[in-house]
Image (tube, rainbow, N blue to C red; front, side, top):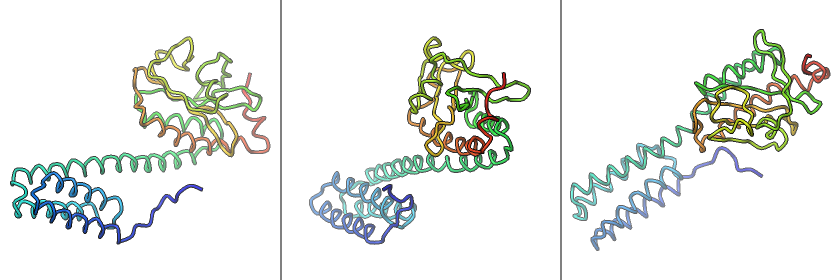
Length: 264
């Protein structure tokens, strides 16, 4: 069973961290162990932000006050105290950066979901998906290949272009559909990856799943090598899930299978 996404935070852990910092700080001052005091201050700062209910600024002020107390007690010089301040700000900055990096996905998900809800046909919904994903991956080409129910893939019409069936060439899009696993490469091999757009140098391809059914593949290609950081590949999987739910509504309709077959 997965863990809840909202964790209930309690007061007692933050008091435990404060007690540890106070007792450890007193011992450090008695024995002149500056390195131990720094370790305790930074550890308490991390623990207060992770386990406690107080805000980041409150925790930062508490730890800065502890560093000042260490200077008054003689364990730190004022230059060393400033160094502790810099360390706390740097640590807190990284914590806020990674937290903000995760939170930035929420508005993107809300935006794409809202835009996809405007689609009234499969073709229109896929066109909206490609357009909106292109906005959040500027400079890249986006394609959504939809399964036709007979083991094939096709690209829904976009504008005046007719639907196009994809040849079984063993490219990345077919491998992803067959395996059900994402695929990414920093340097495209045209003979092996078979990109959907010309001049592609790197790509990410993820399957579209809804209710355990493979609905197609979402593929993003770039004309630059190493265009997609490896630690951000999962973001496209989240977006693909939203797209799959939108197009799945059309495919699951009683007459959808016949309606979405490629037009010859």
